[in-house]
Image 1 (cartoon, rainbow over the protein chains, first blue to last red):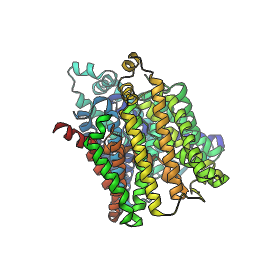
Image 2 (cartoon, chains in turn purple, blue):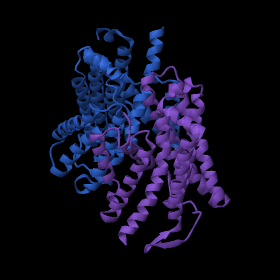
Image 3 (cartoon, chains in turn brown, blue):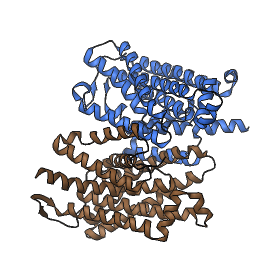
Length: 291
Length: 308
């Protein structure tokens, strides 16, 4: 009974983590950018969906769409206003661009977080779920919303896999992550590929944010923890490796659920952090990462 | 090095310190309290700049070193009643040990991987503090019975003196042959090694020095506040402020980092009337500086002087 509950809850959480971390790792894999405004973009999507559905009353589906749209806009704003100027800057030495992108996106994330807090307060917001009600699976009362979350996450990840491996655009993205110079030599504009990747990232982060808002609820305080959890999942899986992140998301999701159910919810994040430190010492490139 | 004592930077710094030292004679205790905190923050930022600007190691967890120093000193005083000065020394020592532990992965991995390890170190410390709440005071914080002094002016002078001495030592170190080797090994470890310099030894030394000053400053701050809490010395947000200070003031300048920290804290206070927007405005200004003046305040000033 409890085993089934852990299995089901853990799956939903893990699928959500996986979706959130996939976009994050994709951007790093392709353009070497660690986007520290990730959590802020997810929260912005959830808050936009909440505001559209609860304040404007446009309905849950339209609200969710607006949330994803806001995340897409935010992702473009992050790329064009913060990341691209730093990458193109001639005054910043190349070897220091990484830290500048980190600092820049971090500040950008704080700005988004503060604006959300200013206009929508710090209170936790729960987005109206698209599906409601409870069903019984293997003797566990499970909210249908939880099942919906897990299904959407898996579907979106499957779509992403198809997009990357089966379409021309996807193959260009894949090629750019392997060898950017080679891609430009083949006559593809690198900037266009980056724009595509940021668009994919925005949609993924948006969906993850809106689902999170329906499943657990968000507030402007969740920005930091969300970025941190995406970060640790991506590191565990190996920076830039999408399949590594998926495995890591499930490892972290189940570890957290197990700890919360069997030990105490207060210690929830500790085993995953210990595992992370352990992996960093014996295999710094993560589970499936390349050096 | 000799050129420094005749340079304009030296005279400007000297004048600033002298003016700052006379402040307690004519400003209120409120301003002094604000600047006291800002000076300790300045030391955090300078210690971070030594690691990043010179050794080339991106330490996302400056608060790991600060927190270990602060909490060690705080716990020894609050739980065991040891004297303030002994606690401060032991706090700095604990921080040095923490710096050595942190340096271990840095000698194996580079770039973002090292940065992530340091971030995880902070999260671990934070969890540790919450889990062992009996010892550390948990999320509420640890109340510390002793303080160095309650006189605002004296506290201010201690902080100013401490920052000035730290700045002199850290800046001197950064301009010394050791600092140059560090800078070389940060930029191109293979070539620096090929020239016959022991990179491991130099980097370890940088970590120890950085940890020592972070821990010492953290311990002093705890005895100024009279409390140690996650929100003031460990939280990732505090670490972010330290990093932003150093980048804002001008990385690889050491002295700029202190300026950046003072600016950040004073600006945050000036903007208090804007309420919740204060953090937004400070972050926006910092972002604009990062985008348009990547050299930071001191970097921009120095390059102008070099040009003229």
